[in-house]
Image (cartoon, rainbow, N blue to C red; front, side, top):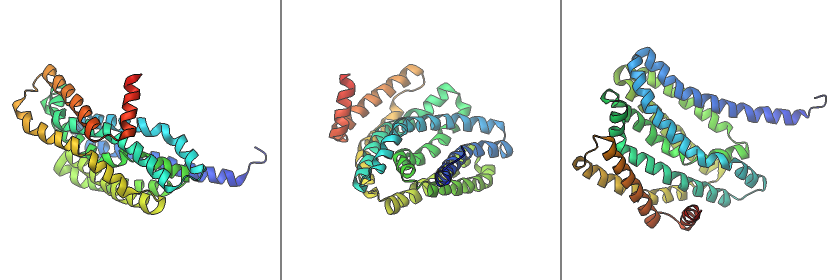
Length: 286
């Protein structure tokens, strides 16, 4: 404490400041919608929004379960001067694994989420389905690109992301305040979704490509090819759903289980690469 290396202290403070800013803005981003809804629309609308946001929280936890454990690996790769191709391969490999889980969750929620909410919370919370969808779908982009944030941290280039977060949070607050009196909870969710598409989708992907050097086009070409199975299943499911009853828990759970099993089998057959197939085989083998 008597002879602190000031250059290291300055570097630590500068690094931690923007990590803290990013975390703070992220927390405020999700909290302000509820505050504004409470001010302008009443507690009943906040209750609907809360139900929808629970599904969003679960989706975020599904994604971060993968990326959270990779920060040390990413840091070591950057410290060892890993090439842009090596970082891109890690970015794509983890993103594909995250997308496999998230695509199942979202496509399944589109098909069965409304029935689930009506059985679980009651018909008066039906709008929670649309609140969840309007937020979950735009979140797909940042959730399958969490490894990009790990790379930014390892390279000490996360300042830009924190500033972008702050800007989209401010835009979200202003737009939500304007639109809530007209559209209520769905309006708040719509503003959050659009903010995420612009900030995390367009701006951050451009930053990953131009500044970090990740091959974003290759990443999205992989994701688009993988999307054929869930999109096809979703279309077939939407076409046949009206002929299948989901008015009780038993029927709903059976359909969810069948959908999940078909999804896994079709993805394994048509979308998984050799690394993913080997991962599945090792997991089942254990």
